[in-house]
Amino acid sequence: MSEKPTGTSPAPIGEGYFVIPAKPSERPRLLGNKCRSCGEVFFPRRVACRNCSSQDMEDIVFSSSGKLYAFTTIRVRPPHCIVPVPYMLGIVELEGGERVRTLLTDCDQSSLEIGMDMELGIESIGKAQEPVGKIEVGQEVQAWKFRPVRKRQ
Figure (spheres, helix red, strand yellow):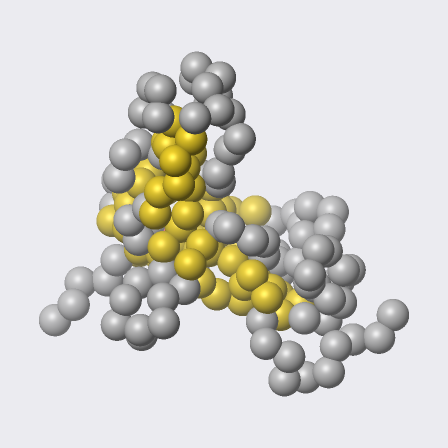
C-alpha cells in the first residue's frame, strides 16, 4: 500500500457526524436526530429511538458548546486507533441532555473540572493506517473534539 500524496485534503472520520460552516466566524456543529414520538435526542444519528423504539426521527443540529460530564487520560492505544497516546477522552453534555463521547484538546487533566464549559472544534486526529469508506491510507482524518472555553479578555 502506498500513501496518498501530500496535499490531499483531510477527510471527515465519517459522513453525517458534523458540519463545518463556510464562514470562519461560525462554529462547527454536531449532527444528530430527535425522536418525534418521545423527544429523546441522539448523537450520532440513529434509525430507531432507544427509548420508545419509534423510527419517526427528525434531523437536528446541536449547539457547539456543552458542559464537561466526565474525563480520563488514555495511555494504551486501542487496536486500529490512529490517535497518538496519551490522549484525553471525555463526555460532554450538550443542550438537550445528549452526552457525547469525545476527544478533548487544548487541556490536560489538571486543567479540567466537571461542569466546566466546553466548545466544539474539528481537528486532525492523525493519518489513516488502512482504508475505511472514502478515507485512503495516509490521508489526514478529521474528527470532533471539545476544548475548555477560554475566558476572552
